[in-house]
Image (cartoon, rainbow, N blue to C red):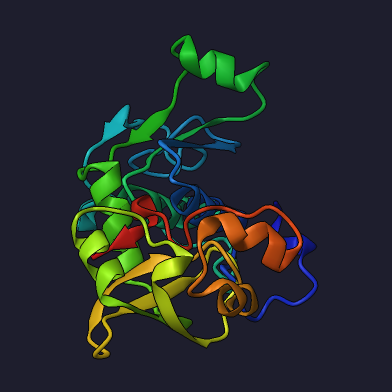
Length: 232
């Protein structure tokens, strides 16, 4: 994916491919993100300008001092440079994803990374699963799913949300977007990433998973919101 490939950028403008990559990595639940750059890691200063600059092997915490070492972005649009890579690292580690910066011109860079090539690893402090749940909980819902009493009991027992337990669908959302999950009384129980569009969800709400293919005309997923994509 390339930020410059988009036709309409207002909704997804991140400013650079580094941060776009970090957002995709967190969304996909990736364990690691590798940024291939023109430098072999994160330095105490710009190594091209300061010969005494030293490279970090591992950064366990992005402190204000570390941020100061990144300097300013290359342009006023905050594109490029080590600053945006550091912003990408903050996004990645907050989502439980480790991130490495290494030189991309190396022959077979990923193999070189495995074999111990120079790089800087940014290490997440939180468990990836917990971090992903925290990230989902911070998202703004695009719609709401109202459940029946049986579905509420199932969710509290750690089950996924099936279409049969949904009594009402509101809002407009696409697949993979956040929705609020409500009790029959309208109390917010949690949030989750839905596996169907709002139009599809309205059609299959209240129906068993085995009926989805007949209703939509194609085979779908059994769960409307999988438990791994849900915070209750």
